[in-house]
Length: 315
Image 1 (cartoon, one colour):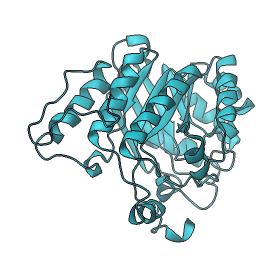
Image 2 (spheres, helix red, strand yellow):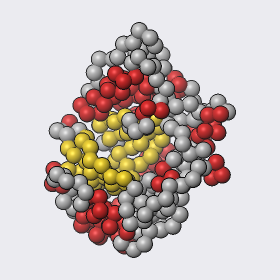
Image 3 (spheres, rainbow, N blue to C red):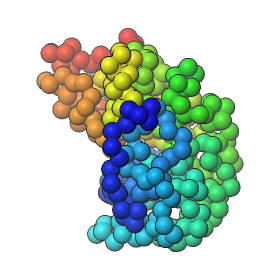
Image 4 (cartoon, rainbow, N blue to C red):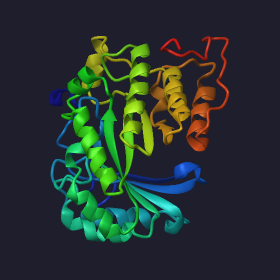
């Protein structure tokens, strides 16, 4: 897997590799809130999942002391007009926030001080790293904390082959720990991971949504499985992987919203790489944007060229 990788991006350990502000519907159907997202530069995640391309924006070593807090300050200073008391903060690090080699625990107090004015702080973490550090960081912030975990898929064979090094029981235990300590759960789910047909990809995305909400998820993010890390390109060449269609992503999002168990978002980063009908793709992407913004499914897009809407699972 490592030998198939393209070159890693060159990064400054004292600067985030990206940051932005976008709106998300508030929890429990509340009004939209601004979310400041900071993509932290840090050491590569040790789990090295097969489908992951986030390692390209990571380092091969732990950052110097104070670098993480400096990155947060740098980004927040460049978000004019942001009102923390009415906003949320995402600290995403292409891995696990509670991996001490990625985010040194010595950074927690200053990062927590910077996060404390925000209504909620959201970090990401592998289930194996969920534990006492989550509680310590939450207590330092003194405000609600949300942890995002990658479930990816509940398909047992595919989950094992993704090199996630996680079982569904382990995921459920980590989710239970978070719930026990009043820490909210956000879940990442892949739409059509490798080794699944289009119809199977949608069916297992739906089953994964069911499982995530059963574990107490407040929010689920549906991520179209994408290439870009070398390994996925090899699987595509052998016919073992293809990205999902926009129809599958739409159908998965619509199903998740129909459950009324929590917020559901379709990840539209890199959506241009998804196979599409030139006649209706723009309207389909806009429909997904509306779903994300309103948590409601507008009427389906009907296309005379591709015959849409279609449900790849045949439902």
